[in-house]
Length: 113
Image 1 (tube, one colour):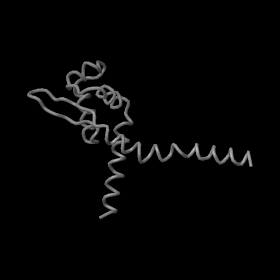
Image 2 (cartoon, helix red, strand yellow):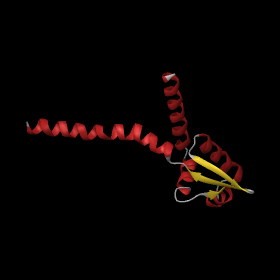
Image 3 (cartoon, one colour):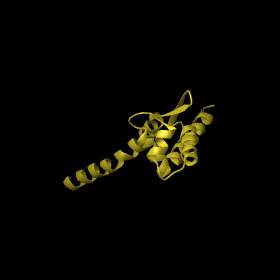
Image 4 (cartoon, rainbow, N blue to C red):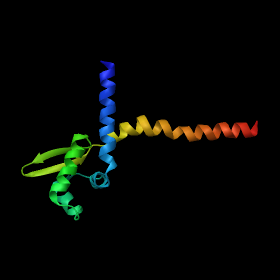
């Protein structure tokens, strides 16, 4: 059971990395950073893309759980879900960001010793 859980986590991390690998999807996440927007508003913010393309990117972000969609009448409101990004930051970036600092500290102590 533990192995299955870890595999699901790895697969979901891969999906998140793939989702944020595309420039347009990162743009959409940036647009949603401060407040939710309707799909129509996002289309206006991305004038070089047609509505179908924006919707495809939104669906991918939704599958990666980076965007939460709420329907109000005929409107689709899209909201940023930063929790998956925070989880990746904690498990990957924090882990590797301390490596250069540790190396510099060791180098400094060797030079002084």
